[in-house]
Length: 383
Ligand code: EPS
Image 1 (cartoon, rainbow, N blue to C red):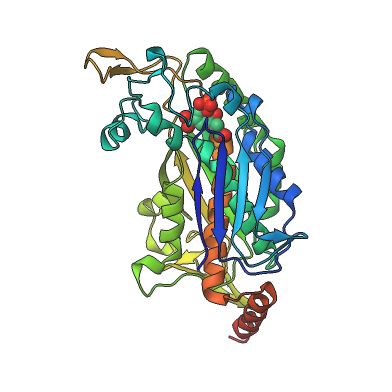
Image 2: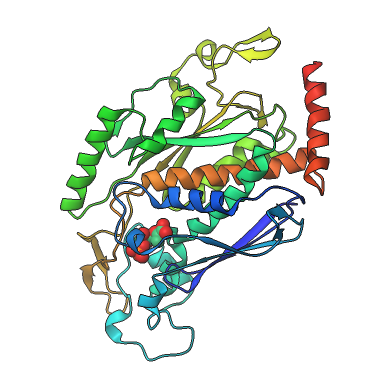
């Protein structure tokens, strides 16, 4: 069973993760993992923190001479910003300056519910872990999953389709076209839209405000038959929705035509089947999944991210010590992190797909997994 656990506070010493269950002999390129980490750090609208960090992964176990051993893989990403937070985030007991204790919860963040649930006077004790800083490890983990998926030519790309009120006009996008998103500072494919979005981010920044948006992820070359309809917890679309809803700031997930299907007739929604060397579809409104099973088409997933709740122009809140009305705590933050979130989501989906591949074609050595996969694909082409 493929699994991981990660830990780390946003301004602590660093972030750590342990991955267990990957087969041996998968090629792992550390430069590739670091380049994926760099993609996550980009995006117009990021705040001061990204000028401090240059995320690099350090592998502590599980990989030797560029290949997985089959043993648990431990990764470490250091927080450079730790140097500036050593006192506030001190591991040893230290007297705290009252002014550095956070007592005014930000609406939309973990602050109020988390401080009550975990019984902390200083809200920092919950906000540090809720921070999207944690996604750095999940991108490193996901890029190891992507290395595994490369063995089967499965590739995952993303682009941003909306920031604030500016949305890309709906059109069918070829997988190869998605590579163009890498050239855009806001990861959009349409240059005109890019300019409008950049101006909108500048406007929001000037007003001390933040912006959300929508991004779309495509999974290419997915074999038919991942996931299962047999029970709710084996459905592939359910697993994808869960991992994306657990990403910081995500408020909605759609697969294929998603919410739009509610406005359409059944005859227009369902993707007609024809045969030309293999089974094909005239459209892909299902987004590559039917009844919880991948159907061989590209998987298309969208997620909506809310605007970041740390505002320079803070909302009304109360001081949890005095119960007096107050402005919420001001924390340094990003104006818009939607482009970064789309990169994160690629890696979360890579993790789910890698896990499903191992459920279906499992083995202890990558060659064993490939043998199982190739046999199955031979069978599929005979149907
Ligand atoms: C975040 C607040 C900002 C973001 C951070 C997530 O950090 P800071 O509080 O240090 O300014 O930049 O994201 C990252 C550090 C990152 O690596 O993505 C938050 O409150 O969620």
